[in-house]
Length: 139
Image 1 (cartoon, rainbow, N blue to C red):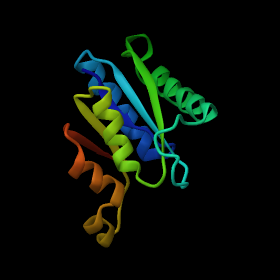
Image 2 (cartoon, one colour; image 1 turned 120 degrees about the vertical axis):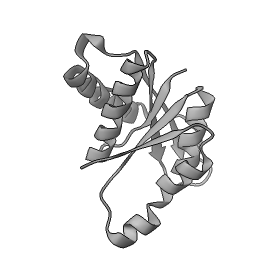
Image 3 (cartoon, rainbow, N blue to C red; image 1 turned 30 degrees about the vertical axis):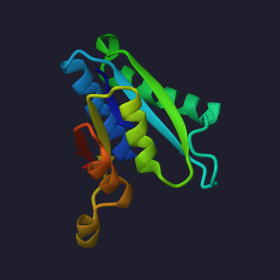
Image 4 (cartoon, rainbow, N blue to C red; image 1 turned 30 degrees about the horizontal axis):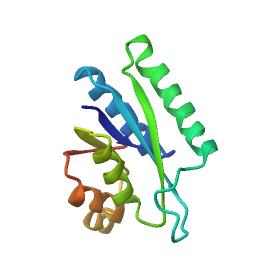
């Protein structure tokens, strides 16, 4: 069963990909990089994401893989979808549809109030995911 990681182009996303790569390597499994393109338009959820966005994610992940794992890199692939405002549900659906054993997500430093509220998307992923979730905090 693969490990899934929620991709975003921020430093916390890179930290999540790094942790997921290490998990996949240690547990001798593959990596699913989950890419959710936010459209903001009703009726567009679940349609294929733009090819250019998927290619950009593939390039970013390939760079991280080359820097960290080299030839010992686990097999990986990008799976994508679109969302019309509910990114958390899209991430959970992608992870479960592809049979992930673990979902890795990145988090950033937060203020005291931010720590209390945690972030709507992250909180929803934690509450709704049927698989264990590893939250990686970017330092």
